[in-house]
Length: 365
Image (tube, rainbow, N blue to C red; front, side, top):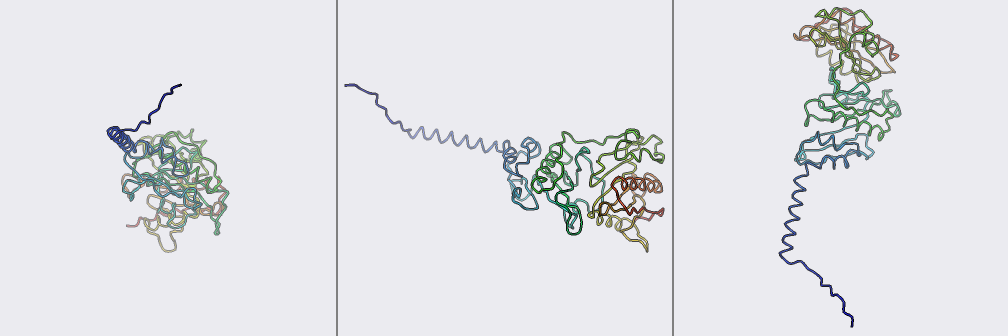
């Protein structure tokens, strides 16, 4: 009779089960301890509509246990919000928002610019953004969304609140904002052109007058300029594209390396209130004038126009180390502001250009 091999069912004993339990506990504990290492890639896969990069998050986020914040990407909401919170669940490590805005009170543009300030341009000219009070900001016009009921352009505003993880711009936070802007552009149907990812933080590139002629600031290079305080030939910083929502040109004195005059153009009805606050709080406005006027102060001036059916405001600032003085005489600052505003109005087909007269109104004491 043929014989076969008998198989005995093996059951682990109590000792083996104990060893297995210890091993599993060690593996689970190791996975939990390494969670701060792998969680950036998990957040990139699961949050913000998949528009994040794990590599960038790994450089931005602190290496500690974190929590996913509320995520409205893909929900159909007009406000797209996502981010990562600290372990207490009450404070953010990184907060991200993208929404369309026409400049409503308490909207993202209004909160960023209580008064007009000279933005920190950390992006190349190809990206219409800057580094704001709390992190990167990108402002794009939305051609497919049309205008609101009051005729105002809808703009996509992307904010990355990075103040909890960095004190100055980084390529990682700048790229994060661009990724989110590109994703929100598609989800909200904005219709803006896709933005390229920056690979570095843009430094202020100082151009000679001849080099500046081919930029948006070429009119300054071609016009008659006042003498610089050091007597050396001016340099120009031209960080923005001429179609940006906020445009900028600066004159740099090579003798000091500092900006003598900053010239900025602000486009859209949303800019009116910030400019009114600026004039009301910093200038003694005489009878017969109002904060809506084009006026010249002791270290800044404002011009106005109408562009594409909305307001445009132009600002020239010239602040010396002594805040009560301007670097250049205000008569020369006014001349530069008028040149800049006229050139910007021509480039963008603006009408009803209003320029400040020669009167320098004293500061509000």
